[in-house]
Length: 85
Image (cartoon, rainbow, N blue to C red; front, top):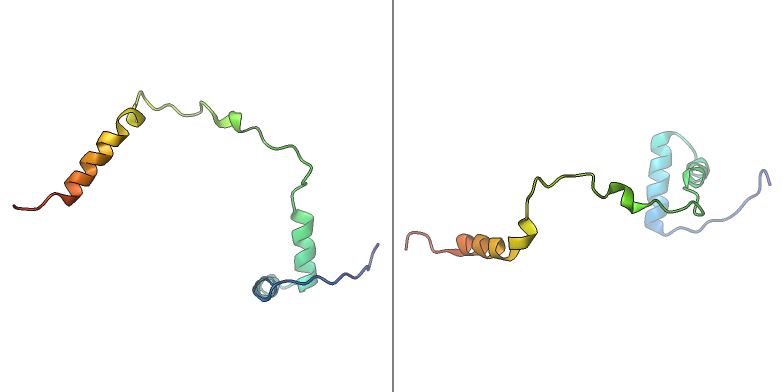
């Protein structure tokens, strides 16, 4: 398949951005796009397990979620409380 030609149609703003980035890297637009395709992560790769980040941090016993409504109310009241009246 070496040397196979394909036409790719891009919206004008994407074309302009790709052209700028290719020029900045000193490569042709074709080479720039080939590099993007080569770096594209494998779509068939298994998704990462988000549970690996659970339990990494210690709140130190903070229970901020328990009183957040009251804290928000106090903050709003303080912000809008008349000054010097």
